[in-house]
Image (cartoon, chains in turn brown, purple):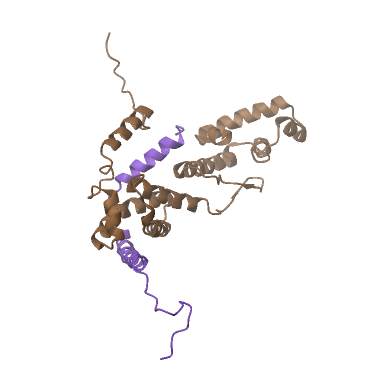
Length: 222
Length: 64
């Protein structure tokens, strides 16, 4: 039997087994994973707290690119990225005496950075106006940063599809179902249509929007 | 779009965070400014100003 000639695409998402192996490898070399010039995070912290400029510079040089690039990629604004970077390092050095090595400096500083970036996303943002003039709230819960960015992109595509691909009746149904959260029976009653007609329209419009905005189904069901 | 569970998404973010090593050229002046600001703050934090005995921090400066 011949081997299949088709190229099999591998997923880029790490499998649980791969992540477990990575975690075990990390355990075996706890201070090497951060690609830092020092071997011992605890000693590095002690030296900085003792006033060593050399160690302060080493930590700053190792983590500035990580913090800044992480923030810039998500916030897409150099000014915002600078603000976050400053906040992160102020927090890091202010709280350095509380670092006891329970996790690595990499994980600790990553956690601070992620929180600061996510906090920016949780600030009040401009409201997206729906086609009916009501506000469509952008998800504001503590989602992971990437998920928040993805959700915003999906909503943008969704808005575009609603405006350009749906009939006026479908737009009205979409509004009542997904913004007003009304039941199909209520929508049918208020529009003078049968429930089956509403369901059929919902099905058609969801297919049209799903094609234009991949990922919307999961967002609406979440 | 492939749904990514929170833990895996966080691990991916951590890997991405760990791998960043280069600073964009535009950010270089900010990097140097922030370095000095942080160092001064840290020095103040590690060596707080010594208060003169018998005086409160809120006391007005002496005229002599």
